[in-house]
Image (cartoon, rainbow, N blue to C red; front, side):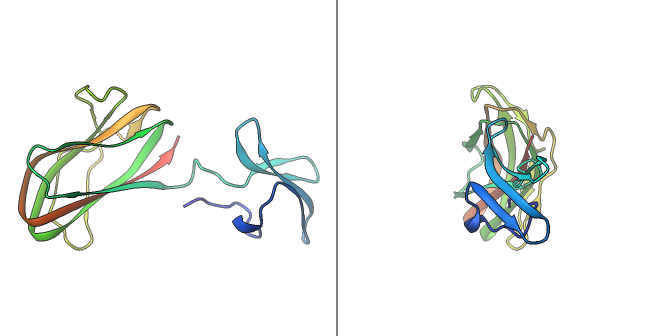
Length: 166
């Protein structure tokens, strides 16, 4: 979710140019070339980012059908430094149990840094939250999923990774 700092503007109505706030006066809205953020300039010349990506929570979600005990699957690459806030996994199927670990590193062929400790998910309802190990991922890094055990019938595991941009 992206947080708008000024709720009286809607995303649909934002157009680069001048706007009038009946309570406080004249504003300009533009893309600030210094940081490429949508910015509000008030009548006194003060600049305020309208969208603050550093406080926004982003997520990546993936689903793996029929996990095995030796999966090694790339999930995504990040061009910017991120900090993972939470990893949660849920499964469907009969008696699902998958032991996995998420890793990250700029070089995919590297053994990787442990994003999570080894975690087992058996939840088919609300999910199991993994314990984070090294949650700070540098820019230009790969994030991947490795398993060491998997059992159950017709199992699908879904992992949700929630993060902020540093």
